[in-house]
Image (cartoon, rainbow, N blue to C red; front, side, top):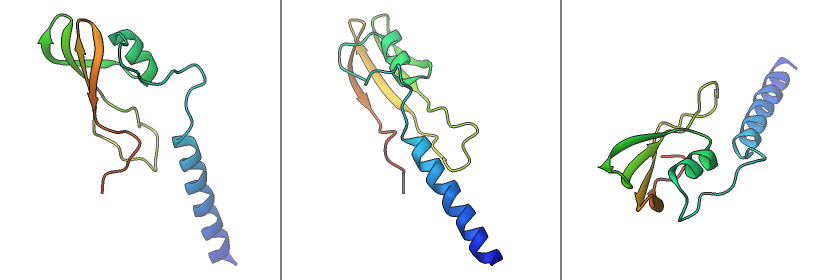
Length: 99
């Protein structure tokens, strides 16, 4: 009986963690080309950190906020390239788990 209860609790925790990880904030919009740095930061829900570049043509990195999440071990960044102040490219994928 104790083994069943333990298995049930573990399954429940994993299911709730997976469901929570896939939820988006209700006011967020998807990341899209042409966004400004402020719009991209709001879309991702994290601040952008300057990496290099001249004003208007910068490369930023957004680090996922996973503090407090027991089941997540994400530490990679999403790199965002801006040209003329607008988002022109990004590299990285927060939707996959590295193997």
